[in-house]
Image (cartoon, rainbow, N blue to C red; front, side, top):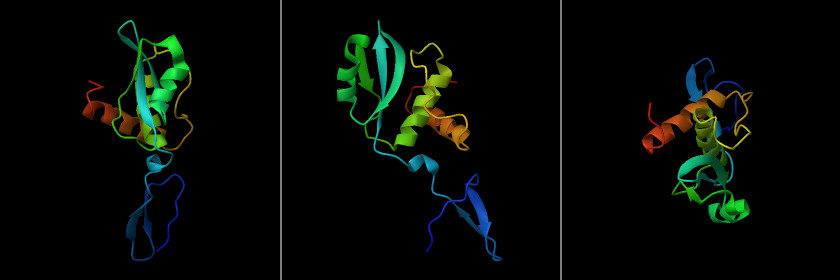
Length: 127
């Protein structure tokens, strides 16, 4: 068995037998990470990611009235970033100024779509 990744293609055919295979999902990479929301005056004003949300809350100090984790179990860092980017795209008024996932990544659209779907499934996005 071989484990390799084909750049820019998630699925592809191999050999003259035309065996259909796929890459490991690029979103499964990265350290275990949580997604959290920052609230000020009862409104969500920030989204972020952290390995340890409680420690991150201390680092933010009094910037927020409440900082709450929205993931019950840690996700891969890229999946957490996908959720974060989905929030950023839908909330330009958030106080975060940096895109979590670069628009130049070949998998950017897939990441945002995954983040959107996660938010819908968990009640954080309505269309």
